[in-house]
Image 1 (tube, rainbow, N blue to C red):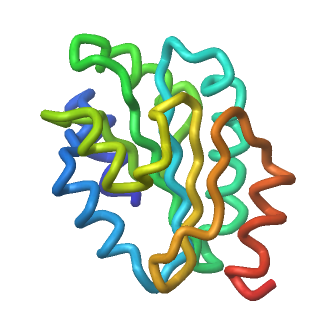
Image 2: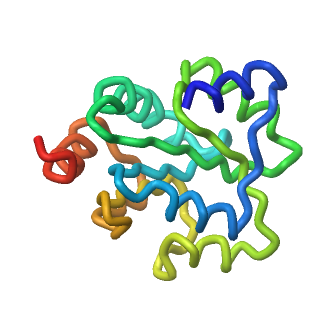
Amino acid sequence: MLLALLILSTIGQLPLLSESQLNQLLESSKGQVLVVNFWATWCGPCREEFPDLVRLHREKADSGLKVVAISMDEPEDEKAAVEFLEKQGVEFSAYLRDFEDFEKFVNVIDPDWSGALPTTFIFDRSGNRAFRRVGKTNFEELIEEIAPLLGN
């Protein structure tokens, strides 16, 4: 986690995430409760909910929670995404989407998702999707959804 932030701070770039890498990320996160948030700098509700994701990570990372943010910004807007994440004090993994085919990228995580932003997915420790919110979420809703998955 801190390595991702260190890389971000050092080189001022977000690691790119393709369809296959997204699938690998989901697979490698089994054993943890995973929160995946899709957002963009131009999305007002995305920006509004972000402090709750930062708080969620800070309060629950030691309980087996992994938070990942995937910016759906265009590659040329990467600098704005990096600046936003730095201002938010993000200490969890963050990526910039790098798909060849939008539909294939979206289908990796949920074939029923339109790609609307913001969208947050929660996966249980077995890698099964336990929650999806299309639209802005908040800390209280996230805590309510992850508590049984974390066992508290």
